[in-house]
Length: 297
Image 1: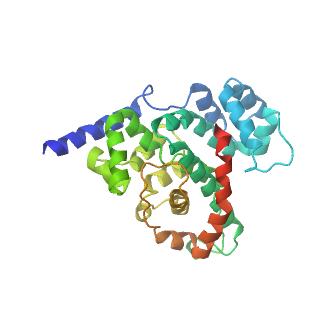
Image 2: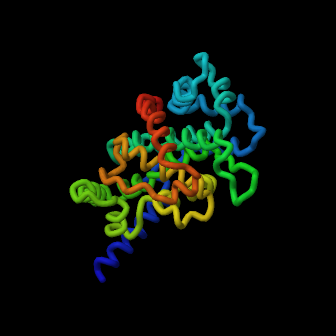
């Protein structure tokens, strides 16, 4: 009884942490304002650019990304407004969101940022590949093809493990013990989280992203990326993140908190309409992404 009450208290404390603006990564005022402005499709590039220049790390990151091989523009871009036009609103939102969690991820767990970023690159690549295939993702028997927003998938994949930052922030020493247990006993991190905190990082990440007022297309895939069976909305996007997470762990990119790699969920094949050859081809293409992890440094 005492053990159960302790876990209930810990869950309450974790949820309380999400409500506090001084104890977890929050969206800074400039970044929050930029995000709100970009909700309007008629936003002013010039005004957005002026706001971004007030945040040097954000400006530098945008220019790094627009000039990275991942986006593949033929000429080097030096002008921030030009970069904003080239990237578009959805990519900018992804970068803005990532800026708010970059330092927190780096400090919470060694390798978590690299894992998250590679997962985001992979998810975006999978989405693009599926969008190009005219035979796949025909929704509900209709002839109209289901088009995936690769940039929103990128954002959700980038933030899929942000719940671990909340646990690490609230219970630093206990979370280290959880990581050690996962490492030495070779069991799923999410099972140990439930045992110790009465919740898990996927739910906490979902709660935080909702608190940030980000769209359901980001927070629902985060909530269900370990449990596809419960995903009623954005099931395709959730399956992509599940697959990207699996591939990132399998390739040993970064560190997600446990060396244990769960078996690939069979539902992924059905939801995405893919086979094992698709996965083999994806692995061959994404491995080079590890060279681009420097982009956000």
